[in-house]
Image 1 (cartoon, rainbow, N blue to C red):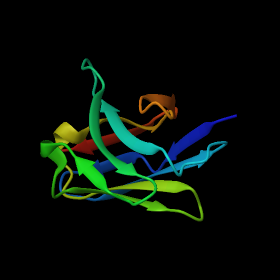
Image 2 (image 1 turned 30 degrees about the horizontal axis):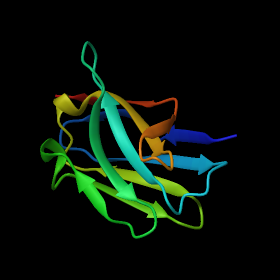
Image 3 (image 1 turned 90 degrees about the horizontal axis):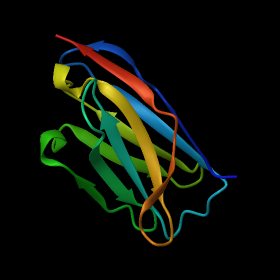
Image 4 (image 1 turned 90 degrees about the vertical axis):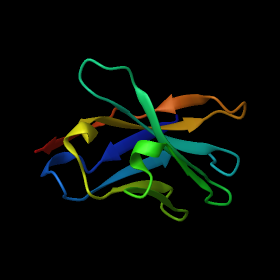
Length: 118
């Protein structure tokens, strides 16, 4: 059974940092990508960034470039989202997801809440 479990969310102030974790089990990740998404209240879920498991190549959307960093721990099968210089607009539920062999995000975690107070 594939499971993705996020952790590390919380309430922080603007300008603070936070690191989210996504622990993956039940999936061989060599040919998969892991993405981070977020959904703010009243808004659609949006893509934040991703990492390719086999070589660690990352991709970020413009609003988080230079502030967010995605990394992985191969031994622990865990993906991290380091968030620095947080802004109130970063407030959202953050999800990690893994791609299927066809490349679509098919496996999702339950989400972790990040709240940034201004």
